[in-house]
Image (tube, rainbow, N blue to C red; front, side, top):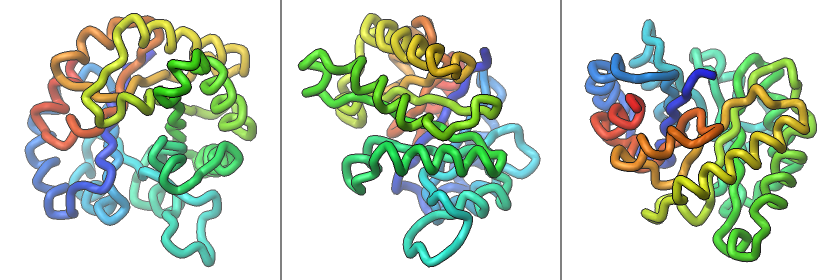
Length: 241
């Protein structure tokens, strides 16, 4: 299975900064050992599209609504992402769930809609520290996958990104043993649901100094990287493991 190295820029980088980043990153991208995907903020999607034209590097949106257009103030259109040449949409990130109250039913609608446009949804799942310490990790992930993929088309691509919420932007990283155990659980859940070919990415304070050890773990097919993807050299090192 091909590796995928995805960069979630969250609410960072203006269009100007986006163009400057890609001017530098494209010189380093030849070292990547898998597919490289960027998720810039909505305001910088067009800059990413222009910068990556003719490149094998992919891009997509961090979120979308489950309709192409309409009276949905503040939402993003996956159709526009497609029109710009995008390939992916990030769905169900823990920040969307926690800050904006997105539930699994809404996530499922978004996954299905993105697939219907011929784009690939990257579905984020993950447990909180309290849930892990209460031995509820498996149950939480099983529920998120069951509900989030409830309307998904098994014949179309979908990517799963496992991000333990307690490790996102905290500097805390799941141990290789924890990653191996959890990714194996996620794979088994996906297999039971009929999505065993879906790549499973790990996210949560991935950096150049821990990426090589994490990528060796079973069923780790790449990374979804936050802070370390904002610097071209740092992310290129991660994408080359």
